[in-house]
Image (cartoon, rainbow over all chains, first blue to last red; front, side, top):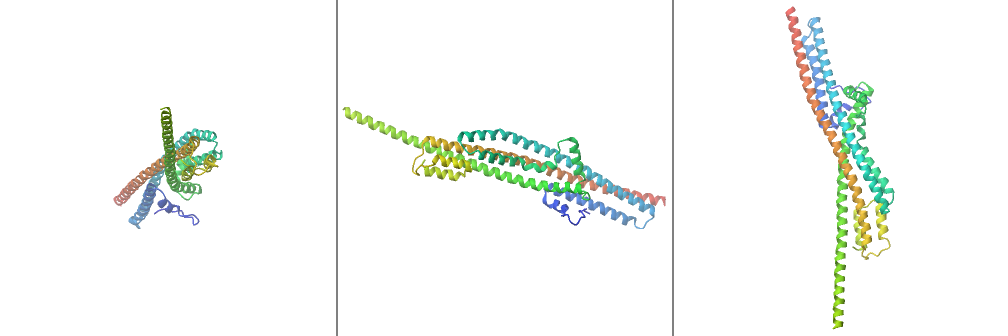
Amino acid sequence: MTEAPPQVNRPNIWERMKTSVSSGWEKFTGALGRGRDRVQDFAVEARAFVGAGVQGIRDRAEAVIGEVKGDFDGGVKQTLRNLGETVSVAGKSLWERVKTIGERVKDKVEGVKTRCQELGVGPGLVSKFRDGIDRVRQLPADISVLRAQKEDEKIAAMDKTAVALNPDNEEEYEVLRRFSRVYPQMNERCTQLQNRAQKLYQRVETARKAKHDLENERADARKVKKLADEASKAKYKAATTLSAA
Amino acid sequence: MRVDEAKKLIGDLSFATEVNEKANEILFGLADDYVLDDERIDKLTALIDLEIEMAQIEADACEQTSQAMGDFLKEVDTASEKAAVEIDQLTENVINQGKQKLQQTIGEETVVK
């Protein structure tokens, strides 16, 4: 049986997590739900099996039920610890990559600033541009809840993740709530970024084409001017020759 | 290129406000049929270059960040799937062990009787 949070004022996060996050997470929560159901069914079947037998048998059956529950909970905790560690490591790696992107962009922003000054373009553009880039860098900030800088924080974060599926504790419930929000938000933002990148690349292409057209026009104008100059020179030369003759 | 053609070209590019102001400044006071001289064309192409540079920087940042986030999500997804398989296996093992222990318990009790 799936242990949904019993509190009445809480949204049914257990159900939401099954439907709103990744297929992997969906499979995971599904497996957990199935596992808990089967452990519960085992307890019911075991009690029915020993029935109204002697007290000794019933006591032993209860001990076996307790062992099964204990083994299952222990195994779940270990699996969650491993999962928490993977998420933590992946989150840290993501954070580093975004930091590197930010550092690379920093120099380029300075280059744009210089170009704007040279061209006499208003300084507002640089700050707007910088804000735009900063927003990109801040997008994965939600993962800060899952990343940890220090080793002890990392272990604490993993422990929290490991027990996160016990909704009785407020703090643990909060971790679960955050975890359930991180994935769909990240997924959505990832798509937003891809769309923005596509739009910008399209803009680059349009601007390149416009520049090309402008330069072609100039080249054509130069050719026309050159031809006109040559014609004029030829006309002058002819006139001079005629006049000399 | 004539001024009216240049204005259309700039309009189609949807420059940032500040760049647009500068482009209008370059074309200010010129008749629509005036053919742009080299100096003005140079200034306009420099503005287009600036626009290209900014869009390229932001596009690359968006693309790279999006890729990094995608990799993170994929990794979490794969790890969750692996955890699901582990939980299914765990369930199978603990239930089978429980059944064996229960059978053993009943058996021992029967033997004692």
